[in-house]
Image (cartoon, rainbow, N blue to C red):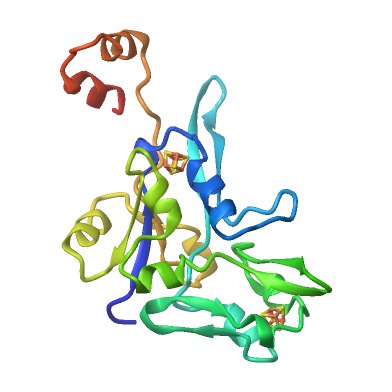
Length: 210
Ligand code: SF4
Ligand code: SF4
């Protein structure tokens, strides 16, 4: 696929505030209890006692090889321009075939009025076509989320960094959601204390990010 949109998560910059998830829920009026299209969760990595915690953001990938499209019997799930994978709700019969087929567990069935429909992240399609970012990206207070086309030099630079990779490449669906390296963050107390002193150079804060 040529020039298309991608989303990138930088775990080094994420503080786990979940503002992205809450804003998504508000903007998309996801009223069903516990229904989120994205979530940021504390995740343990390593082997005890050498374990670290980091924030890992789970969201959905608008895959190049989107198996949900082929599984949909009605054509409700389709590929829009610039890589978006969307659902025409009027055509959705709530059969759940796409939910079962998606190895990234990116979809779920939800009650919408008297009907059951498939639901997923749209990357805020209408906002993007107005020249805005998805709400999660615009609400992230640390800049941990990036969104743009593969032709964008900023996106190209991040994608070319060593260790940047797509989520779940093992599923072969070519997800277009990427993350920079998931690694232990330096959080030693002296660095954090020095970063909290008013007027301290930002190099200390950068040091805390490892
Ligand atoms: S739940 Fe809807 S979108 Fe999913 S496969 Fe069935 S008809 Fe298509
Ligand atoms: S808004 Fe940004 S910093 Fe906060 S949890 Fe989401 S990605 Fe992380």
